[in-house]
Length: 456
Figure (cartoon, rainbow, N blue to C red):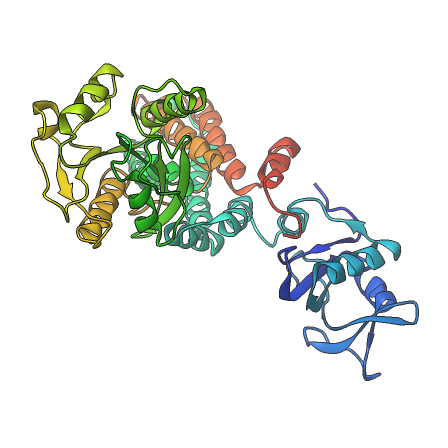
């Protein structure tokens, strides 16, 4: 697949107002277009990769003072001629620069088109290109670290090493086609099994803790549940550090679910404040309670808030709505709220088996212990140690790779004819090529870059 010959333009920074905005132009006419819409203050020759001060111009009218950086091919992000114009960050200025570039012959870049061109030019393989997208979308320190490691080639190097070993095995099998089965040396078969088992170990390590990928990317879901005035909204506000939910003494103030996020120990945690559980004739409140119950069923952890003297009433409601069956000591937590008052801890037998903490949002007692416990719950079954994969595509292909290697191991054990083994080796090599993008369909490429933002 060859790159397009068009010249593209897009804003490479956030479209919101900021101090600086960068518009990127890439393609064979990048320099020509830049000379049409930008002029240097001093008529000196522009050197590559140096920042030069000048003016964005429309014909002879000066629009904004801006810095231009030129990066000739092939030493640029896309491998093409690239120009970046650094202007003041008003959105109207960036829009004007793009408008001028379009008028001079550029085309508006599609989402991810700059990185797509970098991949097609061999600047990145497909796993690294995916890492760029995940790096931009990262919302916690753990995801940032994983994406950076993959962008640096961590996964690519391992896949290339696996492929190199497989090519040697395939070459051996191809050479053995000239010999009869009686000439096959037993030590050679043992050697192939050792190599395949070593590859299998590497692949197994790549799959380690891959079940935690969804939590790392999308967050761990915690739902706060309790009777009206149990302190759910106050707790949410305290955990966030600002007033997000309305807090009043009137029952039923929260009528719908409210979800916000915090980061604890590098893990993104989504906390949902649910509507207070009670019997209500108010149609809106009833809808909110129904949504709350559904949220509880879909959450990773349920935190039950019980204010003093409401343990029995809380348990009754949890039983009546079949919520009690979702509670266990592994993923649930009881919070005795308003601990600054005289706390009643007469928990029912069903709830007494679950870990309980005391907390008061009034004097902040117990909040540190609560955060530590939530972090522990979120990470105990979602370890990120040795996590290497970033996307579902990578996960599926690595699983297929492991299954195909196991097929090859069994064929070698049973002394299967070389021509059959060779076909299976080629399948494994093909999976490696799909991972790095050396052999992949246009449909896959389109899918990989479809979630990118414009300008990257």
